[in-house]
Length: 325
Ligand code: MTE
Image (cartoon, rainbow, N blue to C red; front, side, top):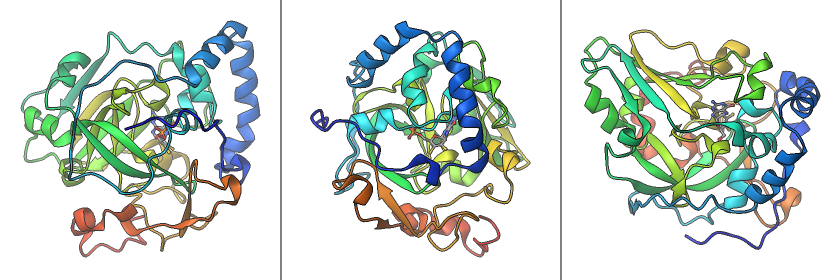
């Protein structure tokens, strides 16, 4: 996969048009906070160096031909410069600018709750649990933009099988790190920290659900959720929790950060659905980040389940997807 090194970074979206209201109002305050905090001018030189280069740490992976798309792959720059990672700020450029403060070693992921084999996994043993694959997935953000991303990782089901859930386990909760010393954004009450997400156990076991350690054949850049994140391609991007420290099996639907912050806007399921609008905007179309024409590029139609209906529609048979949004 070749990186698109020539195209200069340019955001194709006017962020004020798509950002959740509370976020937009608080954005200024957070930027000021980060500017007067531990992040001085020297960080800017780091930023300029990091921003436009890959991180260089290879993550050998085998292409999985079952997960390939003919679509143009989004450039490394766009994937790593246009991010949502509120622990580092609410602006799309904040994660690339500030996430270098995140220490990804040592790192452990605690697998607990309703399982026969709870375990605190060291990140380097977790990396070796299953063969590393490369999978190209569509990634659709609830805000109306999308990307096509070559992820590196393996199916989450490998980890689930290794920890042997009890018969009573029905849901899986994913908890991100929330350390104010490393993450300036968690001093802001824009979301309920730590960032928490959840899946039904059968969704978590679906072969599409990926535990990702890298992209473009290299370890994940911090801003994309290093050292380990979830990728759930048929759901809006916010279901894909970043920088995970805890995976907990429960018998109750986990409370998730976005649902707590705005229950009428964000449901537990959050399956990509062009027929169910967000209360403040349509979900019928999307804008591919980095596509030719920038802001004026034609929007493309959003597909049910983000194009993965064949693989996942059966999981929701008989459910009213307007009610369970
Ligand atoms: N995980 C954590 N811990 N914090 C976040 O703010 N943002 C979510 C999701 N996971 C978020 C998170 C949202 S809204 C999106 S769209 C995706 O991460 C963005 O992933 P990307 O930056 O790799 O594109």
